[in-house]
Image 1 (cartoon, helix red, strand yellow):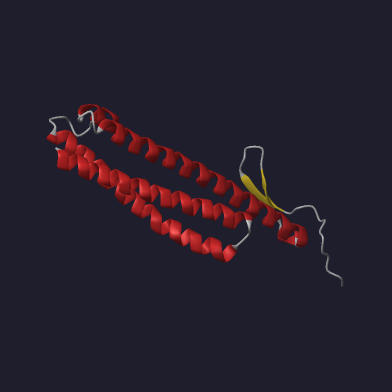
Image 2: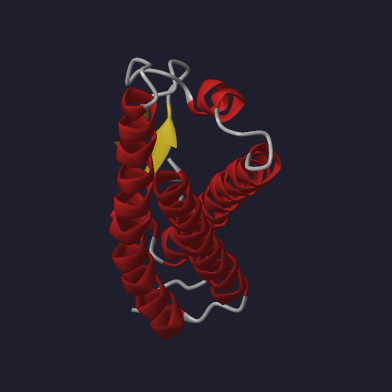
Length: 165
């Protein structure tokens, strides 16, 4: 069982590292959004898209090791990680709990940063759309109906730039 536990610990450390790298990319993304660096943002998106499957693979490996360890200890493979930790030798429990807590913290912080970045990008897109429609009002615009649906139609004919004929 010691070898299985050591492998699980190494896998948890690897998962922690991968989540840390994802969070760093999301923080970089936020900086790029705020600084309006379109080229940097495109590169960052590529890096994030490459990191997501790495995180998923680390998570799947950890989950498989959890199942294998549970079965090797005579328990069902559906045993949760927290339940499994209670069944391992006491000297391993604090380390396993700390690693799981760190992973969960990074996961929550990554989700929070992802939501923040989404809001920033959405707001930037809305502002650009408003600017385009104020410069070229004849192109129409998108508004929301009372039901919350997007409807298209012409915006009021006021603009910052009017063509001189």
